[in-house]
Length: 411
Picture 1 (cartoon, rainbow, N blue to C red):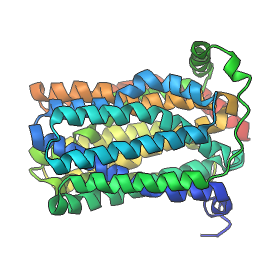
Picture 2: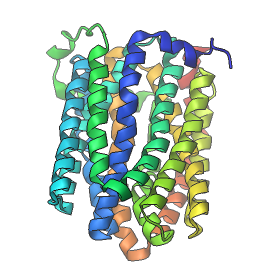
Picture 3: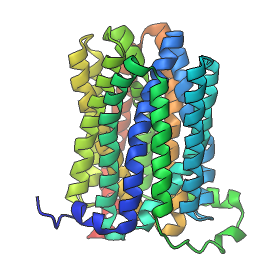
């Protein structure tokens, strides 16, 4: 592949390179901690309801805070905002490690600490989206976002694999210590980034509530963003919680342990990496709307395959298939949206994206967590996949208008 490919050229951007060099260790260790938290919750309770509660505590605050976080990002310096957020996440990881090493970390405390990080992530995510868009040109959005997603997925593949080795050897506290170190590395990278603070004087004169409302109005009135966000919402509520239920699948369905859990997470990451890399190396916005629709269909098919067997190797294959299809959908939506909005609206729009991507799965995790105790975890996701197929059928007639609205700017 030519070194002139946009995915290679973008590394000559000093600020982007520093941002990613600091971010990758944090991505890696965040997945290690995520596996550790999930396995600890399962080990303490053996309850899908508690697994759902932990996931909801981590993801739920995004529902209430993302829109406000986006508006705040549009009012202040996003680089300073993400620095503060990352320092807070570092302190949370240190607290998890200390309490676990002391032997006093209960399921209730684990939920509370998950809620801590859940309240920080809305501000972290909206700032992150704004910083990435601010340090690259508009023509570099596709490779920059695709590469960011690719490296995130590399960490998703490697992180759970390392966690699968660390947990038997050191206990889950090892994953928390690792994430504290990863957060510290990202803090160093963020302080190496040099970005001109945007002029926010005019925006601070407006009401924060009005700014939040303007974000909703903009998204609802956009012929492309609205249907894509609606599709993503259905998928995130119905099917994305399946990844939060991997500990239950590993333990009860596939009759495995932390190693099996790491295989499922790693396979999902490998599939997602392949799809993200294809967006990054493609370097184009054209065709991404079609990838969204096809990705949703393939994710439904992957879900049916995943729940159809109790063999771990089959689950691993369909986990990879699901990771590919879901990330193909989400990376495409993120790239299209970043390309379609201006800087003065970016924080609010990407705040709503973060609300959907990280917030709405909390609702699904709670429903699946309690529903699985009643009718079984496989039955829950079979129903969820059927609902997603119905939503896709409803969205298909809107494909043409969505594609024109999202891609015509790049003709």
